[in-house]
Length: 492
Image 1 (cartoon, rainbow, N blue to C red):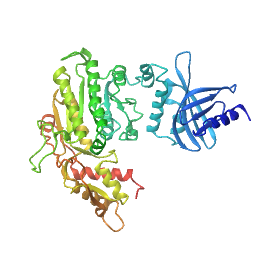
Image 2: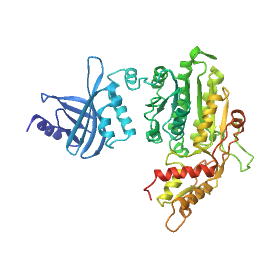
Image 3: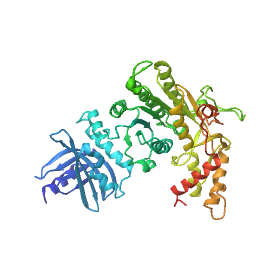
Image 4: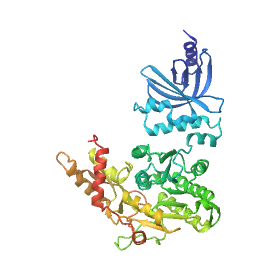
């Protein structure tokens, strides 16, 4: 029995309650999974302590972990990544500044063992390991240095891995070849880098995983990339979730918006109402919702306009109303060039599974009950997501400074109409054996504070900027269902 085996047996006796995984090759790491403590054996057989984070345990035979080693003469941190597969140990050593191309990505990601989101988690965990050993700003700089085309204008898009943002970024990159896009997204449950596969290798695109509430990171991005415009999508947006945990919505939607616009003000402006010479045309565009206006009567002539008083009825809409007010205040108090757009309900490709239309399609294909709140007669104005992106584009480039523009599809539909229409299209495109999908529709208890009707008067953006929705609901929902049939194929 060699030193390694003897030590391992001793360690097991000491920590019987903790699971220990040993990786044996030239260098060996033991991980006490209860305490995230690692031990490494050098070439002389000597064991020494390493900070180790267990990133993922796939099963008994596959483990992934990270351990830091010492700084080199240039001050860079080395780290080691390990994974075990089918009793074979794989190990790589790389410099932290080369993290974008480190071996674990090639070894695991290409083998399908981890996805893009998990790879971003690996990077984040390595950052956590090093924060106590290297200044945070220096570390961020190594991870996210500016390698975009220098002659282009840099635009910061927040929440770009979410539903609307991931439709907007490819559209914006294609239309404006003189723009670089920096996408700042925390990749919460609603963010997914798979939504951006078509542009992930675009040389004018940069993804940064981070929190809009992290002022230090936001300041770094503005300085490193010399940001000349902000289009702010990032938000918690699901009403049901806001009822369960309103604090998260206040933090992201209110504190996050404040952090972004305050950093933008300090980067772009000399003093109130005076921009620095090189930032004269910089604009902060805040994406918001029609839910800030509250609810409408059943009168079809009763519509939300830009002058409708705010009357939010859920923690989500209250947090968005608060963020709108912050942006408005920075225009009126400091003279910032701001735009706010309030949109109606979006639908289309890449929407999160939890939302109404994907839920109806998914449950239908799985032949599960299709849940509809209350009597199903709640009305929403539906806007195809690419039409919304085009409206944002127009408002950002041509909108009047300090103004608000409502963007709506003029497609008012009840929830029960939506469910029936989707079932009719599925009956035609992907028929059930004998029955219509409509038979799966099930009415469930209404949610608290469920607004009865939303509808937007989009006359201002139509008349002043020339925007008009290209899709009516029937054309847009058909395209949407075809996209989700491809996504959900194999569910039935």
